[in-house]
Amino acid sequence: MTRILFVFLFTITLAMTAPSQTQNQPEVAQACNLPLSQAPVIRGIRLGMKPDEWLKFFPGSAQDEKIKSILDLPAQYPGYGRNIITFTRASNQNEFAYLPREGFSGIDRVTLILFDNQIVSFGVAYVPTDIKGNPYIWDDVSQLIAIFSETFNLPKDSAWDKKSSRQAVLQCPGFKFELGVTAAPAGATAQLSLKSDYEQIISQRVEADKQKGRAAFKP
Figure (cartoon, rainbow, N blue to C red):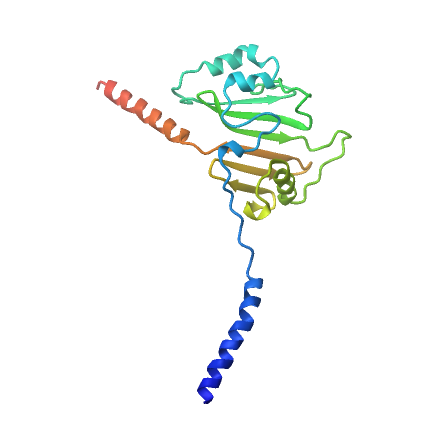
């Protein structure tokens, strides 16, 4: 009788504590299942764009001989089809001053990473001050996540992998999205990358080049 009573009381205790344990469990991280078609489009720039699509966002760039030469490069050494073009308001040796104020207000630079002239990744660096010159003070990357998630219908904070208080990554089936907070004056950065096999294609091109070189070598 004592044994039966003990089992009964133990079962009742479990039934009473189970809901409490469930409530105290940490929230399961929300996964991102967004395809490439739902990747953010920032100021008109999106992944997969070809030159005739993205050049028009930077007036004058289509006539720039240096940009033309980059786009005409063959898919061989050293980039094997991979090139980088950065647009800013003021140019230096490695940048192009074709970033218009209209449509790109609050942005300091846009960097395009191209593979066979298509955008496979692009980064946006935002100016660290607002239009009045007041500094934006980002205390934590979570503040950026909240804004970008609402603007582009992305998963909320729990789906992001926070590398630190200044960097977070969202991994989705069709793309990767990285947000960052820079040091004082505190600016913000965003980087979108296509999930594709272009890196593997580059490796294949490099290896093919090596094989040709070895075949042509004469001791």
